[in-house]
Image: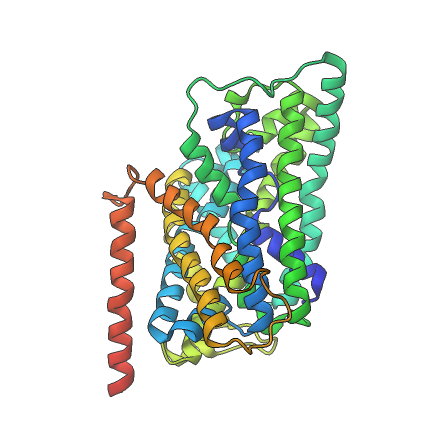
Amino acid sequence: MRLLPLLGATYFMVAGGPYGMEDVIGKAGYWRALMMLAIIPVIWSLPTSLMVGELASSIPDEGGFYVWVRRAMGRFWGFQEAWLSLAASVFDMAIYPAIFVLYLSRFAPAWTAGYRGTLWALAVVVGCALWNLTGAKAVGQASVALFCLLLAPFVALIAAALWTWHGHGAGALLHSVGTPDLAGAISVTMWNYMGWDNASTVAEEVDDPQRNYPRAMLGATLLVAVTYILPLAAVGLAGLAPGQFSTGAWADAARTLAGPLLGLAVVAGGMMNGVAMFNPLMMSYSRIPFAMAEDGLLPSVLQRRTRRGVPWVSVLLCAAIWALALRFTFERLISIDLVLYGASLLLEFVALVVLRYREPNLHRPFRVPGGMVGAIAVGIGPALLIVFALWAARNEKVLGLNALLFSAVIGVAGAAVYAVTELIRRYA
């Protein structure tokens, strides 16, 4: 992949357009949502993209963040990084087929009723698995094309909203919702701004990674923020009530402002969004079991590649696991995903500092500014937000367990599985 496909793939690993932002409006109202969308990237996305830019350009190996943590802190912590990331992916990857089904239900509710919704979600998983088998280059190029297709309806939506604002004066930017849920809104915003490290796992399949990773990270950070903020501000100025927004509501907003044709275009975009985000994330996550197999931590069969270099056994294994989580609800997925992803992200920031100390002479084409102090400071903002996400998830339940207890169980299970794999490796 060259720079533009890498930028497109990174964009969809993180965002995929304004789809998914509706709940932020519905939970917080417009002006609070705009503040979150402007402030959270500075303390969450930018530090993460700087960290990824340094480590991906310094250590451009297949497996990305798993390789960084293993190199910095050893096999055990490398395994835990991979374990937490793959556990988070079980919940994260089920969200995108759910978005596909939600938007399809806006077009044809009967098509998604009952078991049909699950079949459509399963079709997304299978279709993206087949797409991934064609190679990283095809996935990256498709992301560029889908970026243009997905955002085209929102360009028209913004134009229609601004025309309405021009004709009627004041909008609803200062209107509040009945019962604000700021903790929930912040969690959804964090989820919509996370995933910057995912592009690192395909480093061996990226052209000139030392140069292109930092550029893709910083470019995507700006692009994501702009494509979130502009549509939200526009519909607020147009006077649409914030309380009407929930997942899938962009289609209703488009219908209200410009008629059924634009509403249908937004629905089609929402369906494509589910595919456009699932596809590059499948490419990313499937490289982790491959890299672990190379290190002897997973069965060697996961190292098998197609002629195009795709780890096809790993792709199919991941797809099968993700299909099992398709019945979880959207809100529940976000809360547990944030907790697990946050733990793995903290290990990456620790790896940044440890590698600065242990390998000061490592060639770093891009560096987080500020020396060692900068490397430590850049992780403070994300760490604070992760602590907040833990607090916000304190009352969530997953499989009958408190979300934090559930996450702790997964962490302990990771240590136990590592001990078993090392025992097998030593005596096999």
